[in-house]
Amino acid sequence: MTETIKTKVLVIGGGPGGYVAAIRAGQLGLETVLVEAGRLGGTCLIRGCIPSKALIHAASHFATMVETARESRFGIQLETPPTLDFAQTIGWKDGIVDRLSGGVAGLLKRAKVRVIEGWAQFSDAKNCTVTTPSGPLTISAEHVILATGAQPVELPFLPFGGAVISSTEALALQEVPKHLAIVGAGYIGLELGTAFAKLGAKVTIVEAKDQILPLYDDKLVAPVQRWLEQHDVALHLGAKALGHDEGCLNIETREGETIALPADKILVTVGRAPNTFGWGLEQMNLRMSGPFVAVDERCATSTRNVWAIGDLVGEPMLAHKASAQGEMVAEIIAGQRRRFAPVAIPAVCFTEPEIVSVGLSPGDVPAGVEIMIGQFPLQANGRALSMDAGDGFVRVVAQKSDHRILGIQAVGAHISEFSGEFATLLEMGAVLEDVRGIIHAHPTQSEAIFEASLKALGHAIHI
Ligand code: FAD
Image 1 (cartoon, rainbow, N blue to C red):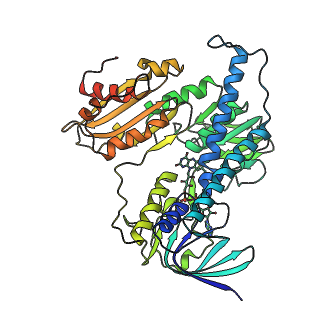
Image 2 (tube, rainbow, N blue to C red; image 1 turned 90 degrees about the vertical axis):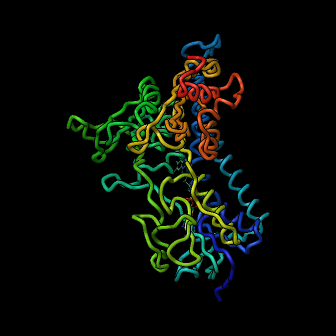
Image 3 (cartoon, rainbow, N blue to C red; image 1 turned 45 degrees about the vertical axis):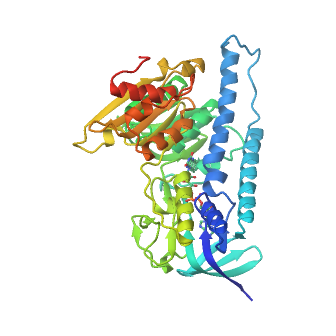
């Protein structure tokens, strides 16, 4: 006989949205069940944020050693070039993933969340059947939190399989491809492309738009493009992928020429689509917003006590947004008054160098709002130069009328670590004069935030 569970809160999906929602619900004393078909941690921990950053880190170590063997730097020489056992690199990356996924399991247990392994299929808004390894189970819940995430978009003329891979397979390769062609120059394609270029692959990037990282302005992107060009990563901008033959990707260039690019692997990173199929969404009577589940500012769907969070509900499809929504929904179910209304959600590209953007870029500011911009080059920052990483800048955008900071963007080595300060300034409603009053430690790249704010006020010290 099929076992039936009744619970207060049912969470579908164990990614950064779902597992955070479940932990918080458990902490608040709500009886909670979490269903996950794959591994705890979801896209982010298992095949996204964490494994990609581990690979980027290892690749950077290798590239530094290769460069040092080619040419001595800072008086350091290597007699012979390093060798790479890529299977071991992947093994190390998998070890980190295992540790974090195990950590999530421990946290869920501590919060007294019951975790059920299997695929959930809804028959109506509050009831589902889960196919578990030990047989089917039905769950009936008072509140349902949908956190089913997203998956890579496939191109009809380049279906996944064989040489054509998504980011998931790229992060599990056992050897570095000789020629890697990447279709789509968004952050996922560029992060992986940079890592594989550092690991020795000959990387070619094909992008339909005229710019890499089309969501960012050209000034922010310029240092990244410079790095790619200086490291022999071929860029085909304004170009279209057409299809593939054995060992090559066929493209039409901006000039209308059809060419074949050598490619033993073709990585397609043209976007991610919400997981809305195959689990009974159509039985739940939910209003949609384009391909996403529509939610209000409390992440409530159109069906009472059905909530949706994370990649399933739209852009930005980022782990920290999913987690913030998950935590909030658990608190709302527990009776707290909350709404999801962040001033800004930071976005980071872990490219070379890194890009951070929080709030409005100059081009996003609504017409009629007068702004002041302060930009400080990392060339004038002692810490950046002492790390041999002067290509980049910090830019502060403020409203002219009251000097309130509307956005901060930066590009530079390790600059992602400042996303927290940028977001804090925006969330606290800081004005330029507030930053002037904050003493930033020397020598750190954070001094560039201070200097950019002074620059906007017209009196930077170090430029
Ligand atoms: P997911 O993490 O996708 O989790 C959804 C889970 O639901 C999955 O584990 C799935 O198995 C499960 N599921 C779905 N349907 C069912 C069902 N019917 N029954 C049971 N289980 C089900 N974001 C960042 O913020 N920073 C980064 O640096 C970053 N890097 C990335 C790099 C790559 C290569 C990729 C692919 C993504 C990256 N992301 C990054 C995006 C980030 O991974 C997602 O935004 C985040 O994982 C979304 O969380 P989520 O909880 O909404 O969904």
